[in-house]
Length: 608
Image 1 (cartoon, rainbow, N blue to C red):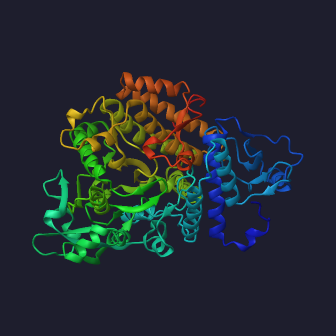
Image 2 (image 1 turned 90 degrees about the vertical axis):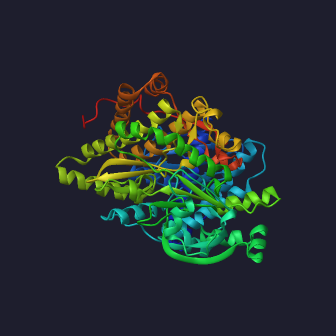
Image 3 (image 1 turned 180 degrees about the vertical axis):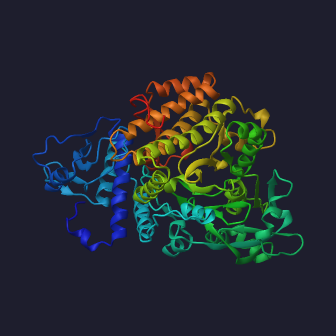
């Protein structure tokens, strides 16, 4: 469990960085979800340091900072490290290695595997559960993927060409979710698969295609053309009466091994056309593919567990994505009038293969395995002068994101003659307005629940300033049953309807988590780092925009939630570590409270 201080000398830099980040994300999760709520976390000035390791004392002498201590009461262990400051939201920036003290043992340096083992053992004892070997395997997988990604550095400069900039942003999430125990895990990919299909490795590839008799194709479209016609420009030619169906190249091998597909291929009912055609770029979700000039992203099924979920298009998700479009389409004129910077990336069509086999379970596996959802391309939605960038490439992406934002804001300050801090506040204010106003309005006025976390938000910059906000992933969009009853959804299955419904309380938790914890906490922690008082002023800007939203767009429902936030009601944080430990479905996620800094924010912001 302990490792010698000289082992780092024999580890390549990419592996060392991946292992260190693994430790940080594990501690992030554990401190936020378990140690802080249970009173087992202390972050503050040095105290009780008589027996501390010399490395801790040296770090404090050289760099200052605060000491983070964690008690593990069920194993009688202690953890010790140094952070830059005591973050009220748990967004700690680590400046020393992690040390561990077992009962009646001296302090020792702890490696990433030792930390993971300790935390999983503590969780097992705390909940009288078996150790989760699957989660440990996922952590190892995440470190291996992170090592491969970190071997390819990300350029500091954002490309000037909008298409190149967008591709670069989607393929630069080197570190992944900062509050997830396995942010880079993708179980099922071999080392060769990683090199071929991982966006962080700057890959692109052609699709695999199957020829399918038209009577075996199931599809729906809200557009004038069916899904098969919408994808035809990218598809190979097939005989009359057949449809060319695309799949991810990895998924082609998975499908080929399925008994029903294998039998259909042997009988000639399906024909494999191989990998061909123009190349697509994998985006940050890995399975959603972008092709410049194509009016649609191809969101393909991929039977790989990526972080929490196996990323297949479940049959009911095909239906539910279209239902979300049906709900949103009548709202588009109102949204365009109120929020001209908003761009909703519609998912207006889907297609799959239905072999109509008597074995319903195996037949469902085929439908889900071939599932394709079309998503409107950022190319079609961006304003002419807009440069679209994935928000996650700027924030929550550790030092790569920090470097990009530092360069961007310094350039704006130099161009406009202001200070970097003043420009930072103005930039952040524009971002908050683009984010909060439409997401809140869709929920409070229309009962539509988006999940605008950093990987679901694409930001359109004009001359470096936030001017557009693209919201995506209709699969994750939910509806409140109070506003969207079964009677309003007569054309979809009962299972699809049930998958769409979140009650008002759960819907608010998802929105509040995504907007405040996953998104704005990361943005403020990054922009405000090492700048005295700036983080507090940024939260004051959030307060201003909440008040402004209520004055301009609010109703009684929003007043209740916003007043609670202004009064300091905690943010709800999704428990990714616990969810993975207990193997919960994402829908069943639990939440823990995180300190809300809005009520603690000081006076007026400089930008006003």
